[in-house]
Image 1 (tube, each protein chain N blue to C red):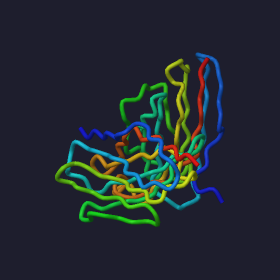
Image 2: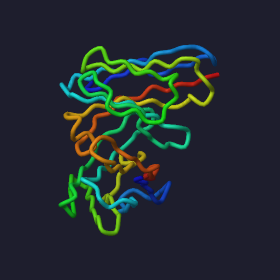
Image 3: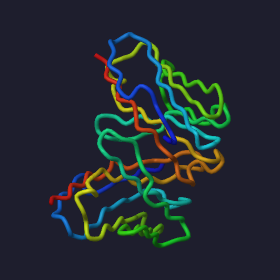
Length: 111
Length: 116
């Protein structure tokens, strides 16, 4: 059974700093890993999907890395902005049908 | 245009009542899902439908019954609501059920259910 853990549960940093969010998973036989963003009172928005054959995926100021062998992924956010404040969730497929989510990291960027 | 929409956004009701949440997607996707996010923010899948056919049915009380009139709609009906049913319910969709866990899923805004 796949389990996904995210550390830290909450993070608060000043605007402009670079930061890293961590995700670990127990079963390394995954097809991909996805990072989502959840804003308060809203649904989830997919940020990055990194395939198992990839080591990195970039979108703007976001960079996701994947190390399958160690069961870890990181989401790097460069030059953080107050608008980046949200909860960030990682998810991996269990089998082909469904996603297993971590508990999320609640990120606050202070102006 | 909203890709995945849910109604209502908020639902407050008494224990024992029966309620429904509706979901519609205009992305032309074949697969739709219902997730539950509890007070600790854990997001867990409940059901998955592909072209009106039930694909995934997690360990969910049979008071919860999904219904898919067509592949663009997946509604969730809950009978005899209990306090523990209070949560945020998210609908989602993806292109192909055979790859449902392998590709991007698009989420609705959520329905916040509070059972009193």
